[in-house]
Structure formats: structure tokens, C-alpha cells
Image: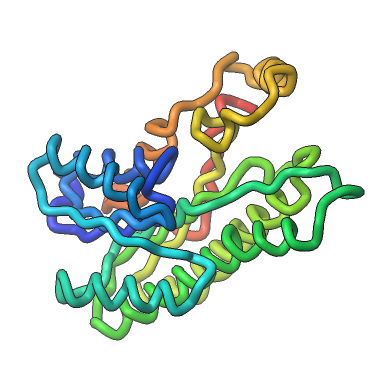
Length: 248
């Protein structure tokens, strides 16, 4: 197994892409720290993978938009394992969709806080912990969105946050490459997750017509790309973004 002995920290691990990432990384041998604002969902993720892969994984409650919450979680990880994670996956994210003319300031701020500021805080705090422990082989994968590249009607806040994630990833990769920390982003298209189940059927039909492969993606298909970026097979890849969109 290609990730045996590696400690992986996944945010937004309670559902969707985050949960699938936990499953795939555990399959490849990593020890999993599943973090989510909804602790029950994170527990469900860990219970499922622990039964399947017979390893000791843990789940933690985390608010990525809260600096103190991140500090607390990192403290628990260091106490449990004696080292920081060397695979970090920023999958936590929210939507608060509306047209620009109706989008509230509160909904704009909340999406930027979780999706962009949360990613920044996790990157900063985990990178400092990795450097402080003298580790020089780590991979941080940030989940962006194809909406961040092309925009999407009704998602000014979400698209802006994910565009920011991509540029944050690129900038951090330049600053941290000489520390042995690689950073890359994955840009999913329309993926079958709880976030997309609320899309109206008419909109789903329109989106489907724009996808050359004529189907929506599965969370596992994003997780497999994340697993590749987490391991040594991608050891010379940093600062890049990989689109996983079915050709969208």
C-alpha cells in the first residue's frame, strides 16, 4: 500500500468528497484523522473505514473558519500520534447560492470564511507544524472547483472563494517547495454529493448537457486523484490544478 504509515488529516470528512477521500487513503494504508463540523458524520466515516481496513483512525470536531478550533484539533493530533499529519486534504466547503442582486453580505462572508479563509488557516498551521517537527516530505491538497475557473450563475461567492483557493495553493507552493511541502488543488466538476442534491432538476439537466461524458462524477473519482497527489508517485508535482470534470 503506497501510503502505509502516513498520517492523513481530512477536513469536511463527514460526507461527499471528504468521506470518499478518507476511504481511499485508508485503502492505500494511511492513518486517517477525519475532521468535520458535524462530529456525528465524521464518526460515521471513521466507523465505516475502521471496519473495512482494520486500522486505528480517529474523528474530531472542527470548524475550519475558527483559528482556535484548528489549534485544538492539531494539539489533539500531536498528542495522539506525536507528529503532525503529512497528508492534508482541505475538503470542507459550503454554498450559499443566490444571484448577485440578491446575495446577502452575510452569505458572501460566510462562504469566503469557510472555503477560502479556512483553507488558508489549515495550510498555514499544518505547514508550521510540519516544519517545526523537521519533516521534509508532505503533501497538501486543496479542493477547489471548476466554478472557480469559469464562474457559475448564482455562485458569485462560491466561485470567488474557489478561485481564491486555487491562487492560494499556487502561491503557497512557491513559498513552501524548499521546505519539502507540496501543494496542489483539484477542481471537481459536478459531483454527486449532498451539496449537489439540492440543485433543481432543470438545472441538473442543463448541466448534464454541457458534460461530454454525459454523467455527473462520483466522489471516489475525485478521491483517487487526491490519493495520487498525496503519494510519492506525484513527487515532482506542485503548484498545479487538476480538473476532474468529465470534460465540462
